[in-house]
Image (cartoon, rainbow, N blue to C red; front, side, top):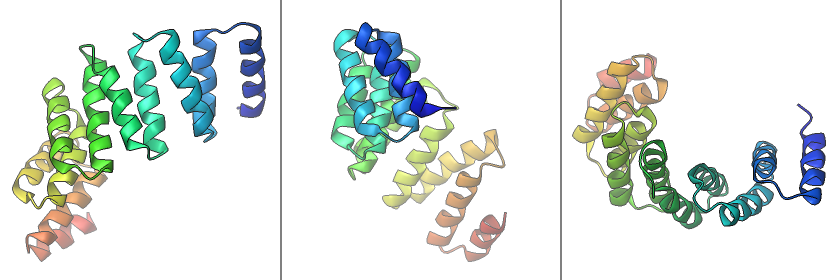
Length: 182
């Protein structure tokens, strides 16, 4: 719980010997303490040391998201997208978030759809895709994602609120009020 001391210890350890695992721990602490520029630099260095380590690119993409640096986020996510499985699914999700941050709804939906194809019960991806669809006034398609999320988790508050927003936008005030009250 003493992040200041952890930073000091990891920094001194890295001064003795550059170690990929220790760098990862330090990057995590920097991220937790909102020292995002330091985390970003360290994660960039880690990608130089081990360019095939996909989780480093995913961590870098998340830090870029927190910095609201969507082009850098997309770049890191594209590099993570080189493999199959968990990394690819998360890379498409992060690319969707980066596209959303840059206001590119169509590419956002395309990347999120790829993530959902790889994992049908990817609730975060479905929710973000539904939000992007609502921004594009594609209410029917957005509601399909919301229904799928609520079938998996009937208490998902974000999905219920978005359902209310869709109902309100489509003129069904009573259903919207019911959703908001729930």
